Length: 291
Image (cartoon, rainbow, N blue to C red):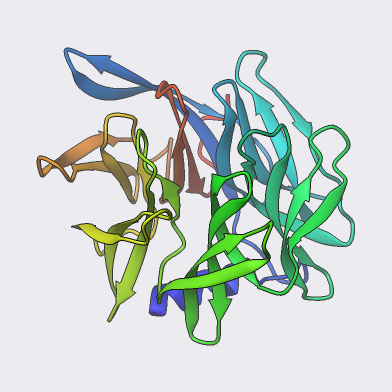
C-alpha cells in the first residue's frame, strides 16, 4: 500500500509542485540465436523536466507526456525521422498516460486540471481537441480492451481499484481492489495484466474481460512497481539501471540487460512496440547520452 500511496501523490501533483526530472529513451530489441538483447540506446525526449509514461501509437510512433511551459502535454516522436511534435496544448491542465484508442486514429489520456479535477479524455490526433470519456471517476491509469471497453485503475480513498468500463452503456464494474499502476494487454491474447497488491507484495495477474476470470501469473519483484510484456511472452521489470526478464510459462528468469550508470539511472515505465522491435523506457535524472 505504501507504493500505491506514493504513485497517487505523484499523479495528483499539480504544476505548483515539483515533478521529477525524467527522460524517455528508445532501444532496439534484437534476437541473436533465439536470445533477446538490447542495443542502440537513444534519448528521445531531451527535455528538462517530466518526460514520462510512453506508449507506442504504432510501430514507428511513440506517445509520451512531456513538460512544456510548466505543465505536461502529449508529445509524439517519429522513430524514422527522429523528430518530435506536439499533439496537445492544454493550458488548463496536464495530460498523462497517452494511449491509442483501438480502431481509431485518436488517443486517450488522463488530464489533471489546474482546478484539481482529474478525468479520462479522448483527444483528436489532428487538432488536439478533447472530449471526456468517463466523467465521474478519477481514473489513474487505463488500458483499452476494445474501442468501447477499457480497464482502468480508479483512485479511491485508500488506493486504486481495478474497473471494467463500458463506454456505450456508461457502466463501470469493480473487478479487484488494491492494485498497482501497471496495466497492459498481454500479447497474442484477449487478456489484460494488472498487479494485485497485498501487504506491500505485488502479484502479476491476468484478467479476461469476456469471462471475468482472474488468474495469478507470477510474483512481482519487491524492487519494481512497473512491468511490460515482450511479444514472446516475457515480463520485463526494471531494477535500478538493469532490466530483468521472467517467462511465466516456463519460469525462466534473469537479467536481460544492465545499462552503464552514466547512460541510465533508475528505470521505471517501459513499453514494447507491437512488432516487438523496440523498447521504450523512462529513467530518472539526465543521463550523459543525449542523442
